[in-house]
Every structure is written in C-alpha cells, then in structure tokens.
Length: 388
Ligand code: NAP
Image 1 (cartoon, rainbow, N blue to C red):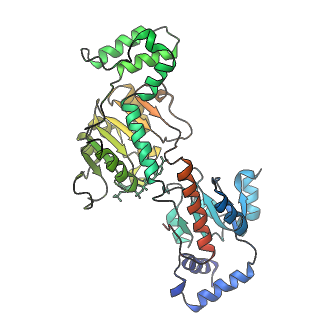
Image 2 (cartoon, rainbow, N blue to C red):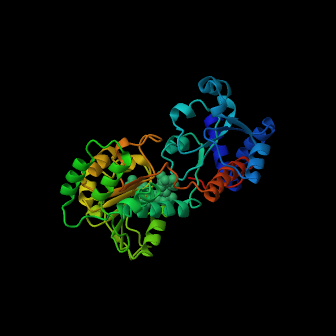
C-alpha cells in the first residue's frame, strides 16, 4: 500500500468512518498505532489561547512543536517534517503546497478559524489530509463586532469620545452634526482651508467630523454580502433596529423569506444604505466589493467588513472614502494585516479595528477547545467534531 493510500485510509478512520472500513484498513491503523506508541507530533503554526483542560489534553496527548520557537524554521521542518502528523494553524500562516510538501505524513490540519482562505483545502483533500475549522462558536461574537463597527462609524463614536477626552466639549460646544445648509463638498473645502497650516491632528479630526455625516442607524436598508452563519446573525440583530434586510449569496435562502435576495452585489448595493460584508474569502469573492459596487452604494452609504480584507478592493475603498463617494466604513480586516492604509486612520467616519471580530476570552477559548478536540478525536479514531 502506498504511503498516500495509507494516509487516505487513516483519513477515513479519523473522520469516524472506521465502522465501514475494511479489515485491512483497521489492521493498517493498528499496525501504525503499535509502530507509533509515542505521542503524535503536532506542529503549531500559531499559538492557541488555552483553558487548563485543553492545555492538559494538548500536552498530555501530543508532542508539540512550535514553529515560532525555531531559530531556523526551514531547517527545523527539513529535520522534523516527516514526523509531523498534525498541524494547528490560525488566521495568518499559510498551509499551502510549500508547507504540505515538507510534511509528508501529516494527517490533519486543525484550524483555529472558520475562514479557510489560508489553507489549501483542495490539496489537503487530494492528499487525504483532514481539515477542521471552528464554525458556530464565533458567530455571535463576530456578528456583535459588525454591529459595534456599524454603530461606531455611523455615529462617529470613537471621534466623539476623543472630542470629550480632549476637553473640547466645554470649549468648542456640542459635537457637530452635518451642516445641512451646505453641500458636503463646500464644507470640505472650507474646512480644508481652515485646517491649513494647523499641525494639530485633533483639529483636523474635528474638521473631518464636520465633513462627515452623522447618520441614523435604525430603519436604514441593510445589504448583507454572504448570508452564511455570521451574515444571518448580523441580519437578525439588525431586524431589532427596524432595518429591512437584503442579501447577496450564491443562491436564494428559502429559510429567510422576509429578506430580499439580489443575485448581483451591485444591485444589492444600489438598494442598500449599509453594506455589511460577511462572505468567505475565495477566488470568486476577492474584490467582490469593487468601485462599481461602492458607487452603487453612493455618497450616503456605509460599508462594514468583518469578513477578510481582500473581499474589498481596498485601494478603491480608500479612494471612495477620500473622495466622499461613500459616507463611511467600519473595518475589522485588511488586505495586508497588520498594516492599515494610512488614509483610513484620521477619518471620523471610518472606524478600524485590528482583526478582533472573534477576540473575546469566551469565544477564543471555545475555538481553541474545538481545535484540540478535533486533534484528540482524529488520533483516537473518533469522528471529527467540525470537519470541512
Ligand atoms: P459560512 O456560514 O460558511 O458563510 C460564508 C458565506 O460566504 C456564505 O453566505 C456563502 O454564500 C458566502 N460565499 C462563499 N463563497 C462565495 C462565493 N464564491 N460567492 C458568493 N458568496 C460566497 O461562514 P461564516 O461562519 O458565516 O463566516 C464567514 C466568514 O467570516 C469567514 O469565512 C471568515 O473569513 C469571516 N470571519 C471573520 C472573523 C473576524 O474576526 N473578523 C471572525 C469569523 C469569521 P452562500 O450562502 O451562497 O453559500
């Protein structure tokens, strides 16, 4: 039996299909178990925040190798790669052909993410490597983050907070709302003139805040791009704000008859005040929010992105914000994390966060538990909890 076939068979065992497996498969697995009485070796590409029980499981059941502890990761992989049977990964490292070629005996990739844009899932499947992710446990938290970003950018909460902290309220009066008497461009030009020569950044911030619109959230038309688990949880929350919900997905969802379906993102944007992006990052969704979509949303529209940076054409979004072709944005994710385009940093109508959609203690623990439980299940021949 070739090494690949053996791995493919072990993959079936790991997926809990052992009941149907042929005797030779079980014999091969038993042989392997006795041959490898030592603990399975697991390579960690990104650290896990672990509760004591999960930490105990991880350390008692596996030999753990941490890539970030290696002075020369390439030499380390050349030496240890063949012994590695499990991989723990996260939002940043790539699990691609380059890595998989160095791990000829890997059986499972357990990802501490729901999005698998950094894992070559097709290649894993081709090679009989199981892949698991962390769906559901992060849905609420990430949907909460989308709502927080939406409220924060539309009501300019960070800039207004800064206004109070800087002691400007008693000196300069109430925080400004849009000057309805003047067209936006005139106000912009006026403020640019006023701000000329002022080195004080907070003055510029104030200028921006006058230029930008403070917009009401309740009742606004919301368009969700990707009505999956998180997209649907965002819709549910916004129903509570009296917002009519529309969505774009690859297909219409009969389970949401009260939501309008658009089979074009441009049409969705044209009929929305707020566009919330919650789709998976794939080839087909890369830059799905492009200039045409942003222009369809228009100068009173807001964009919120809690999916992945590359689903938006970031350069076009920056241009649209600078040129006031869209009203504002709430962004948790970026194309070149942790780098964020500098133009986004001083706009009162733009709120940025360092990819913290799921980053609460409770959620991150639940995700890490799943990562470990999937490894334990795989190496004890039980069904995986969250196979992809
Ligand atoms: P999910 O239930 O699998 O939903 C994925 C959505 O993406 C589905 O609505 C799906 O559309 C859509 N989609 C996938 N491929 C598409 C394509 N080619 N064209 C159009 N739509 C496509 O996943 P989820 O749990 O909601 O998570 C969604 C994403 O959120 C993850 O992939 C991840 O990148 C991101 N996320 C970010 C954070 C954060 O910290 N910011 C945290 C968690 C997750 P269909 O409805 O047509 O299937």
